[in-house]
Image 1: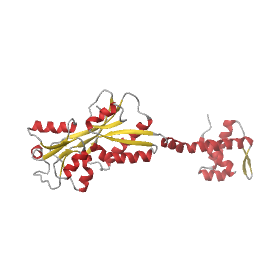
Image 2: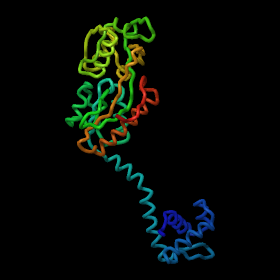
Image 3: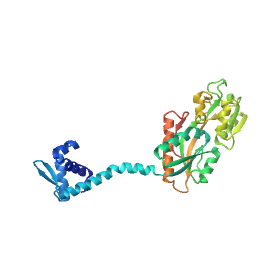
Image 4: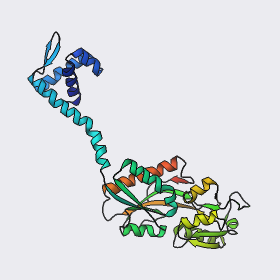
Length: 312
């Protein structure tokens, strides 16, 4: 049997107060129980630690030595959480995260802020690139991990599905639609500005139109939401994108978002290289990223989407 932290804590309190009754009151235990703990401690060590007298208790020479040693042990135990937090704070490095521009508009700033709050010595680099380039950047080591839309399992990459987003018809507020939930026939009559190929979202839209026997009324193409969204807000054309791509404009009323009858969605998949284990810094940022996505979705900030379970 070994000495317990409780016994050391009790012993230190008894020595410092010099009275079993007052020590029991301070520790919120019954005096008989405290006396039993002290007796057990002495039996365990085979030493007399306390001399009991009419005015209280005093430590023997061995008791004084144990008191000093116990204080050191208890201080070390009490400081352990702070030391661990300090160690976390000193995880350093730069972690590069690849995001499609539509995802970056929703996630980039909250992710940076949360990492800085939890891991202040880490610098997050957001690499905003067309979705078709995200996995290439991961495989080349240009980014540590990426959130890639509709990414299929690929040799050399880990693959974790995170959320499924609805594709919405985004229009200028002045655009009037015949149906509250427009179908392909309604959308085909609108000038459209769509993501440039190769792009999985664009391929999905083109396939839906082709299958239904319609052609898109293509006004223009762009590889980034930084062009697509202002074009819609200016009334040049409509587009099909998730809520995340235009949430500021949708919330401000400068763009209207319409649920469509097409039922198109896309998934965001967290991808990293499987060539070597993630560093501690990257692993911690991945954890923060997944928690922040969950918070945004569950709070209703990230609308038009749902969490999905990991898997192929």
